Each structure stands twice: as C-alpha cells, then as structure tokens.
Length: 164
Ligand code: SF4
Ligand code: SF4
Image (cartoon, rainbow, N blue to C red):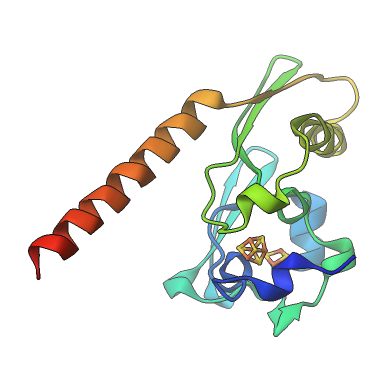
C-alpha cells in the first residue's frame, strides 16, 4: 500500500514544524537527547514535550523520517494526538483528539479503539503495569477546534471578499 504522506499537501509539515510531541524517557533518550540544540523541551512528570524552535524541523527529519520504523508513539498516532495526561495516586488519565493540522485527517484517521490501545500500551510502558489507566477521546476539544477552523475560514473568505 502506498504511503499517503508522500503526497502530503503541506510537504510533511508535521515533521518539519515539530510542535508539542509527547514522548517518554525511553523515546526521549533514543531520539532526542543530544539533538536538543534547536528544540524547546519541557518535562512534565514522566513525559517530555518537544517542539522545534523557530518552526524548524524535527532533528530526526532529513527529507524523510530517519527513525520511521521505530518512531515515537505520538508520531505513530498522528493525526490523532495525545491531549492531557494526569498521573496521581496509582491512576493515569489521558485524553486524545484529532484537532491536528494534517490536511489528510479524514483519509488517515484509523479507528479510535486502535488509537486508544496504542496510547494505553505507551502509558503502561511509561508508568508501569501497576497503574490503573483510563484513555478517553476528547469530543469537546475536537468540536471546539473544528468550529474555530470553520469560523476562521469564513472570516478569511469575508475578508478576501471585502478586499476586492
Ligand atoms: S500525517 Fe498529515 S501532515 Fe503529516 S505528512 Fe502525513 S499527510 Fe502530511
Ligand atoms: S520522529 Fe520522525 S515521524 Fe516523528 S516528528 Fe520526527 S521526523 Fe516526524
């Protein structure tokens, strides 16, 4: 099967403008440690959140992903993405959504159950099997995002109409 990302209308901007990728310690060590010169990295508990500085590319990008077969879970998940993750007193609660900028979202989005399973396995690996793990799709955030995008496109259309 051909890879639809090779015909990405944004020229694979999800890798060339890295923004808010969530990785665990093992993924951070394997793919980002020692390559942090042009990255903004924040650590929240057991997760790292990684963005490129000044809209630069992911350090693993060179014409294409150089670690694709072993890429971080959050990359594999895209165009779903992890939202909030709370870990406290033996429980981990995580949300995910699909309010991403991927122009092929409708084509690429797989079943939610599969995405939730991928996240669950990632959280077990990150926090340990003893934790109770809950993963939920965030309908509200997804709806707000799509309404905001619709409003933005409408405003753009109105503005371009008034400019003529
Ligand atoms: S996931 Fe979406 S934005 Fe990223 S390369 Fe593929 S089509 Fe483009
Ligand atoms: S690790 Fe690979 S798939 Fe993930 S953002 Fe970087 S280049 Fe893209």
